[in-house]
Length: 167
Image 1: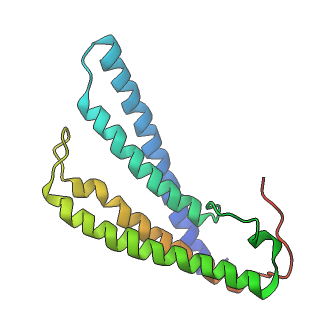
Image 2: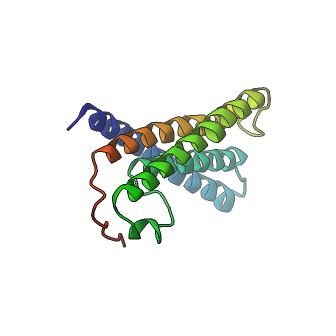
C-alpha cells in the first residue's frame, strides 16, 4: 500500500471516529432534551442549539467522508456507459470540478464567513458563530485532499471496461 493510501486510511478512520462521536453526543443530548422537556417541563435551549450545530458538523464531515470513499452522489447514466480515455477524462473532470467547488465555495467562502461571524455570538451557548462555521472550510480542505487522492488513483486505473453497477 502506498503512503498516500495509508494517509487516506488514517484520515478516514479519524473522520469516522469524529462522526461517530458527534452522533453519540447528539443521541445523549437529544435524550436529555426530551427528559427535561416532557418530564420536568423545563426545556433546555442549550441542548437545542448543541443539537443543531452538532448535526451541521456531522452532516458536513459525513459528506467529506463519503467523498473520500468515492461514494458521492452523481448521475451516472452517461458516465457508466462510456469507457476508455473519454471515461478517464470525464472522471478527472468531475474530480477537478469538485476540487474547484470545494476550494472556492467551501474554503474561500467558508473562511470569509467564519471571519465575519467571529464577532457574533450564539443565542444560548454564547460562543462566537465563527466556531460553528469553521467546519465549512475544514470540510472543503478535506474534500480537496480527497479529490487529489482520487485523481491520482485514476492515473493507475484501467478504464477500458465498464464498471459494475452499485445497488
